[in-house]
Length: 375
Image 1 (cartoon, rainbow, N blue to C red):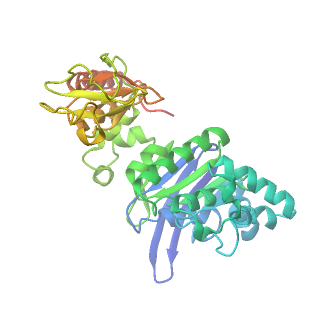
Image 2: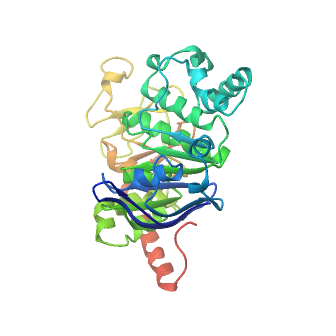
Image 3: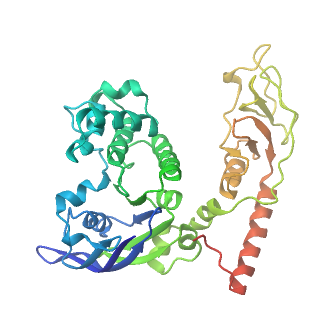
């Protein structure tokens, strides 16, 4: 456990970056620090490994006061991932990952062997081992940064806005990769971001910081979205927090209507007035044909089709179900299995009915005093 007790940081000139912070970060969970610029979230993170020392208060890791630990030794005992990856440009990928084990006294061969194992752990091709950072994409560099942070198998992993410098598609992939790694490794992760969506996607607990370094709310993502502690949190989370909250709701009772999947040479039966869903040879959705659209030749081609909206993978959240229906040009969502094969369609009115039923059930549980947020 990482514990903050009445921690304050005042920089020269009197700037108060963190104000009387007290909180407990539990072992094996992802805790996210989120808030606007200048709210003290990065300062709080860096005080854990003594990159910054507090002005007052104490921080302990598993009962040990970090202020009593030699700073260099403390930092080598924790993984650290930063926004720009911070890779050494003159070292290969393999040697970048091997840096911390080498500093901890592991011989060159052993450190490189460990680095090679971690390449596959973070989803990188082993053939990248001999490349230099400049020869990698931004997403690949961040994966190398994560591998380097894990190289000494630290119990604590600190991540300072690690995915903010990559494009949205790569960012989604890296978030999924982090969650996969956490399921396998169960590290104690402290993650800093300014993005409330990212915070609620990856965090087991979320600490919302207000300007001036005050902790505004510390709770599960569901609780923050459902019941912001004050006006600042509600404003920071945004007006669409109700939609975000659907990410934590399983679509119990959602009806998936069957369709007759066909290949690109034909379309399914009408599933919305005048609209037909087209699938490829493997049964994966290829797009839509709008009213009065006909193929230019004997077969449908990509040029004939209107791109579909997002897909709903069976068993995912109500947010994904509603988004698939709302983003579809036909106004009806497409449900697929984990292999991406069409399993049916969703009608938006029925998704809304399930949402309303869930909302009514939630209100009843709250009224009865039953816990409604995950632990």
